Image 1 (cartoon, rainbow, N blue to C red):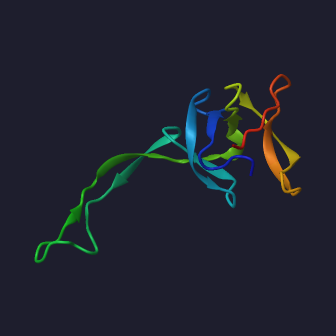
Image 2 (image 1 turned 180 degrees about the vertical axis):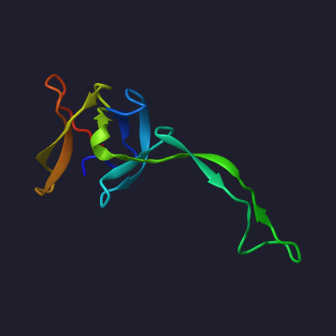
Length: 120
């Protein structure tokens, strides 16, 4: 997957189209990412006792209520934001040589006027 944890991405489609956020979690097996403060859904939870209460004699209870959670988004619905040109871009790969003579594969910005390395 070309999107990684910590990347800044822009939503390309959906109810949050055009908004930007940081990737909190990447799930390559599911081809999905969780983006901070985007694709927010409501989760209704019932109060329930905690498994390991810290106080003796009194059971602690996790509060119930309605919680806002960031739901997973298909990776095809987000675009990486280039840290150099600050625009949404497709991601390409380039093979670069290191000082020791070994080669590494790095992600690059596919914008025609940018082409900078995304990985730092």
